[in-house]
Length: 63
Image (cartoon, rainbow, N blue to C red; front, side, top):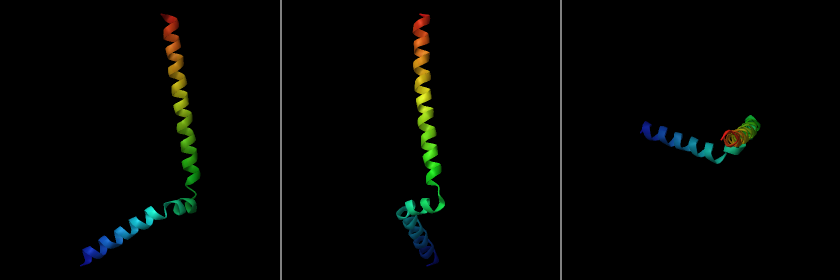
């Protein structure tokens, strides 16, 4: 019987976590960190694309 109570509480906790995820993020101010991480990843991807383009042009000039 105790197993079922524990499983029910875990399921209820997961439900609350999924349902109110945005409110929890707002309370802990973790959204700003996510925004910074997204901008960082975008800049990194753009830099890698630019590097690839420059590398391709250098190879074309050498040939």
